[in-house]
Picture (tube, rainbow, N blue to C red):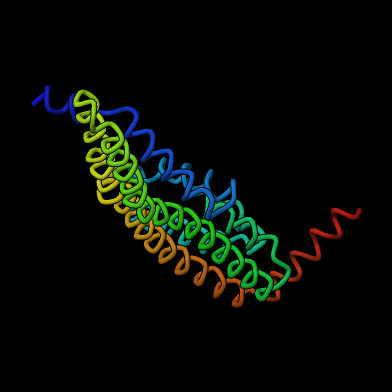
Length: 226
């Protein structure tokens, strides 16, 4: 088994498929999108949507209690491990009106969705490109084999290149890129679901406290100016 695995490892074929796949996928986007796609690999296995949703629910309840006893201007006093909810609480406390907070929430969700989609698109492009890179390697190997028909010693390596690039292309597409794109997409949907719910509750809270929100914002502006 180990001998077979060693025979299946061809650095030239692997470099051709991986290099071509990454280059082709990168050409479809910007440097920032490529960097975002690579950075998305970090939370790929660490993300826990259910736990994040529960943390967000707890943060919302804590914000509601703070608003009830201290006012909406103190919403940013909430203690939470969720970076998203912390940002939302700060914007809720600083919002001059409920409509302003609603506009921020909409923009925040749209921007996050766009970032997620760009990362998913890169891995989808890699999934599409990998088999094509494998076929290119196959053609290159076959051409090399036919050119060297008069030298039997070179036929084997050329045939190996032709077959292994096809294998690598299919492997990269089916086992690496496609599962990554699918999982990132599912994580994005799950994350957006609890974020939409949390922001909707905070927006409703802002509308209930609209007069206090406006007066609190004006007071903070007056203190800042003074």
